[in-house]
Length: 182
Image (tube, rainbow, N blue to C red; front, side, top):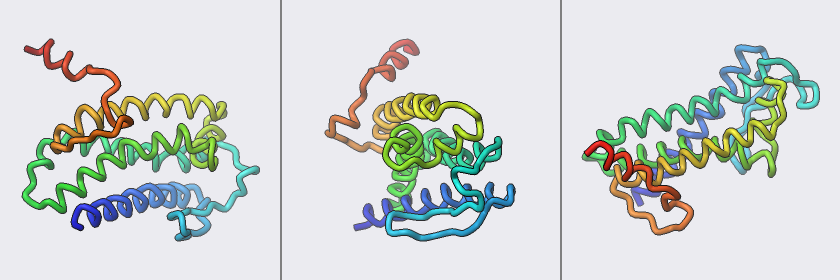
């Protein structure tokens, strides 16, 4: 039960940080309109309609939240050795799930998400004046790199055994690094 509560807390923290960053940056640009809790999650509503958006600010409004969560994932992974030894199972599990979500959710959101629901990749592309597919390709690469970090660093650090084929390492670079250092 504690693990499920830890997972739910991590989801709430992730969603709050992600949408909170959208709201904060949108407020700085005078674009914040409202905040909604929807059946599928949180949503920040902006003042300018989607088809009227232009300018670099949309790259910041749409992209800052993704950048912050991904960087937070790297920071949590960096300190994973310390966190994995915490006495509190609940805190340890929450930090594990936060790291997992921070590393994978937004790269997936920016790479595959636009094919389903649009989202942040469109705002980043509009703000940078580039094709959305470039954003998607970049973050697909980030997703696969982060997936490898999860499989080869996060799981072993927290002593998590995973059998699912999608979470198995695709390459064995960790062993190569260890051999080179010996």
